[in-house]
Length: 404
Image (tube, rainbow, N blue to C red; front, side, top):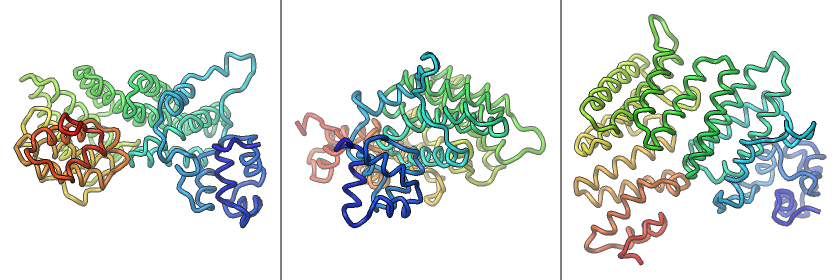
């Protein structure tokens, strides 16, 4: 008997009496045994790709099928489940198997692609539901594949761990995030993909930056960039990886706010801009995008952390509206713009920017402190607070003294 809150119960309710289990299996192109096992409570989850197909066949969004539409991954689920997936004990249980079931390499590719699509859309609640089983399946796959697919399986596992680590940062779990990214580094080494290994250190550098360990963040990124510095003829993938590490190092150096660090940040930004101009377009490799627009965006970031508000807004004009950046990246840029507008006394512009950000990335913004900070300050500054600002403050939880 399926739990009334399980995936199987939601499947059964959605298909009703008009669609049989066999018809649903055919519509979703999955096995009838999977449908029966889910609805009967013998299984509680499935591969991400199969869940996607079932949701589509039932005309549901995947979060609705998972029951995570309004649920935050808190201590009683989500985060705890991800932590458990990061710390398996199946190898210590005398042959007991608590890990996931291996999937094909094609299925593993689809799973990783979906995880990162959700990440760049800021859908952290969905990731809280998907990551535990996805990590177990990717790990089982890496252990089970034959030698022909071993390197790619390690690469996919690394990218899965990286997605977990980056997500956990946004969920306010720095220790678990660090565990995930270190496991990503280990898997990347096994993949023998030098550029993937370099890309993993972008995530390491970013985590150090979030922790306030700016000098270490800069050094990690610079060391990784040095390892893959392009000489002579080089591929666009190599250029993008090198450029991303260089601009990441610049953002860390800028936060040190010393004369020497400011000089290093300027030099690193210059190097990144030269690399981006050489590349000539926005390129996405190994879950990171790099190109002229990315450099323009992070030039704004560097100006903001130095309190150069006018310079930040001037630099922001160099970022084309149509630049092909991931949703979360563009939204993060707007947060910098809103803060600069606020500091220069342009309260209405700052409000409009945050509203645009919320409209663009409603899931992402709920987990971000900078937009909330901007709105909190607006609440305290505005002599006459209108309904639009009051409502936005309440939606973001930016409740100042004037809203209590």
